[in-house]
Amino acid sequence: MSSSPLSGLEERARAARSWPFEQARNLLTHLAKSRVPDPREAHEAIALLNAGDIDGAWNRFPALNRPVVFETGYGPSGLPHMGTFGEVARTTMVRNAFRALTGDRWATRLITVSDDMDGLRKVPDGVPNPEMLAEDLGKPLTVVRDPFGTHDSFGAHNNARLRAFLDSFGFDYEFLSATEAYRSGRFDATLLTLLERFDQIQDIMLPTLGPDRRATYSPFLPISPSTGRVLQVPTLERNVSKGTIVFEDEDGTRVETPVTGGRVKLQWKPDWAMRWTALGVDYEMSGKDLIDSVKVSSRVCRALGGTPPEGFNFEMFLDEAGQKISKSKGNGLTMEEWLRYGAPESLSWYMFQSPKSAKKLHFDVIPRATDDYLQFLAAYPTQEPDKQIDNAVWHIHGGAPPETTSPATFGLLLNLVGVANAADKAALWAYFGKYLPGATAETEPLLDRLMGYALNYYEDFVRPTKVFRTPTDKEKVALLDLAERLRALPADTTDGELIQTEVYAVGKAHEFEPLRAWFGALYEVLLGQSQGPRFGSFAAIYGLEPTIRLIEDGAAGRLVGT
Image (cartoon, rainbow, N blue to C red):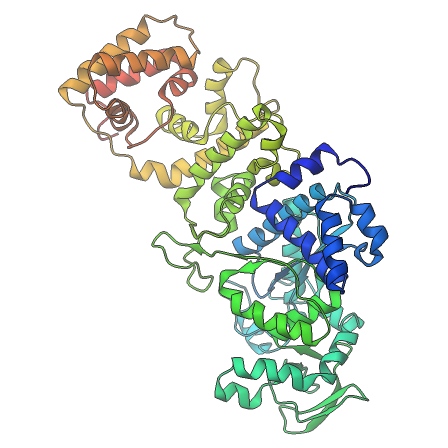
């Protein structure tokens, strides 16, 4: 059916099974159904799009050929956090998959909206000048004074932090301030439609509310002309022809105000629906906790004459005890904390994996996430193209992963830091200078970054938990045998596989059953932990002679208490 042959990338994208491509294909069907109103014609459009005939679909149905809009939202009452990163990262993955699926011929936009017209509900913890914020409670965040003294408002301050945050990860997005959109008139047409269909919106919203809230609820939140606060008050009168509502101000006076020009904002569920309609949003994902909210906002969107976007609900993160992460409880892992101990790529890998499954978000997931990322990156060049496109690193790096990976795992670096008692990168590079002659921070930038993360992680989490033990008689004999076998190797050996062969041979010669009990002994006696890196690789980097001394110290019990 296609009018022109598909590119290799498009062919692979059509067959790809990873979740961003599933979402991209769902979006393609959504576009046909939402932009081609006749069901029979929509079915024809879907057939053309599924066959890869984008040009044919556009020629047959010109309404299809306008940019595809992705959206994410941000509440600027606090700093950007893990959820902010996850939502933008995952949406970007779907956007990149859509580009591949359509041969990058379909224009796309990612709009990140800051809900900065919301009223400040409480004074956040840990900010300067809290008394100033307390005086501004209830006012739009873009009116609340900036306690840091760096921007025109608290909202502007946090918006700047958001943009710097997203820019640091290289995201391609358009920033939209809700305040600017309301005040500029960008939302006016949809706000007037909502005023006209006020009763329909109320019929949708009121059944979702408790009796007390239902009695005073209005989708419109007027800005008080006397105090500047965002008011949750009933709408007393509506004048559709004038585009106004009447409400009672805080001083008891009745005020008539336009619903346009930023003089009112909307309650959040109608606001969400209004944005979808006004901006023509085609795709937005959200957390599982917002499933009911998506349903309600979708009904409001339809009442406004819009089409709810395609999307899916991702699972929430859990803390170490399996409890839902809560910003107010502070029981999660912050962005700053992850980026102190792990590379941004490892965080993107964690966000990519199983977004519909609840995952623990705690410090102990960082080493595994880092090494899993490195494993996928190392595998990428050896895979067939149809496998590469489903590899997580294809999505993490927008289809262009780095050509090289780190020569050492994060787990190995952690052990090298401990055994070498390294205090800085220079100490670690001294070992790698022998293992990888000519290697420097410039030639191995990923390894250099990982060293910094490993130093931080070891000091804060590994060192306090190390417990060395003395070997059993059987283990002691095996350790001394291993030392002798390694001493028989050439002193300048850096062949990790050769060393690993000797380690295996000792374990078998001394009849460790299962063999993993031998490796467990190596880790517990020599490294003070229950698990460790591939021992041959570790010894190759640490050096043969220092490894032999370490083994002899462990066999003699001299590491206990260190």
